[in-house]
Amino acid sequence: MQIGFIGLGIMGAPQAQNLLRAGFSLTVATRTPGKAEKFAQDNKELGKVQAVNTAAEVAAASDIVITMVTDSPDVVAVARGENGIFATAKPGTIIIDMSTISPKVTQELAAEAEAKGLQWLDAPVSGGQKGAIEGTLTIMIGGDSAALEKARPVLEAMGKRITHFGKAGNGQFAKLSNQVIVACNLLSACEGLVFAAKAGLDLNTVHSALTGGAANSWALDVLGKKMIDRDFAPAFMVKLQQKDLRLVLDAASNSHTALPGTSLVHQLLAAVEAEGRGDDGTQSLFRIIERLAGI
Ligand code: NAP
Image 1 (tube, rainbow, N blue to C red):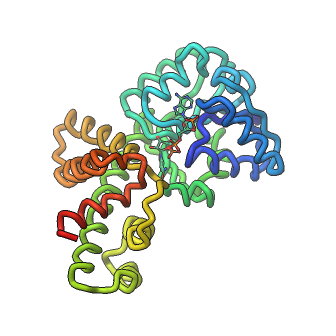
Image 2 (spheres, rainbow, N blue to C red; image 1 turned 45 degrees about the vertical axis):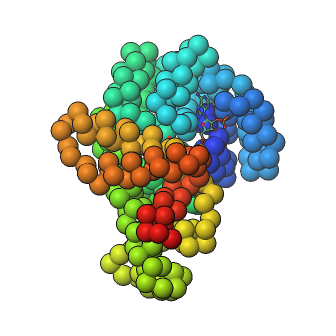
């Protein structure tokens, strides 16, 4: 199977590397001119990889096309745009969108793909940059089960827990549910650590003890450590978390679902953005909570 990969950022690049390691041949493209060529050059030892300039060129060369771009308008541009996937994909091509985007936009694109004889799977992921590098992502699928079975070996090269939630868009709903929990856990990790700091405790000792008990979460374990080390480099940028929380709050508003904790985290992350730190990792929320505590 020829695989196409569009979007070689924090997540996409290591995922594409894992596909090469698993023996798949890749055609890759991304937005910034030259980045795909650099990826192909840097990774030619891992397997057969060819760089092209547009999503249309990727699709023309592929049986399965994976997209890992930023937001709904990016997936729309990559799929439906003038030089997009729909322009050249052969009937039967499976498009796997692993970006986190709107469930409604996903349903529209999936219907459009089906009308063109293509198959669309939404397959957003959880597990962060670490999961992408280690090939241990949790993958949440919406779409046709026969297409999923054909694509499974490809997905298995990137992730460990692959769950089918039913129709198109349902993978995105599962991912947004994940983001609700991730956001609230982020805030609780910040608050717990700031509270311990104010009491004069050594934060490394607190982290080591609390990650062994009922308070543990991915946020406390991975992001809590970065907060203590004052490492605010992005593995998941604040502006992307904000994009996800907007998707959550829109969908929740449509279904009359009150999410007070998620709304609060969205507001607090706006304070991080207001300081010009939207490109920081989400652990940067720690600084705002410190300041509220007078640290
Ligand atoms: P990122 O580092 O900003 O990468 C985004 C990639 O998409 C870049 O390579 C960018 O190209 C490409 N891109 C964006 N718009 C495009 C367009 N219109 N046409 C072609 N390429 C386009 O972001 P990321 O962290 O990898 O996140 C990617 C997706 O995964 C997002 O939906 C995010 O919410 C989701 N996600 C991220 C994480 C995480 O921990 N980082 C975890 C789970 C899910 P250029 O490099 O050329 O600009």
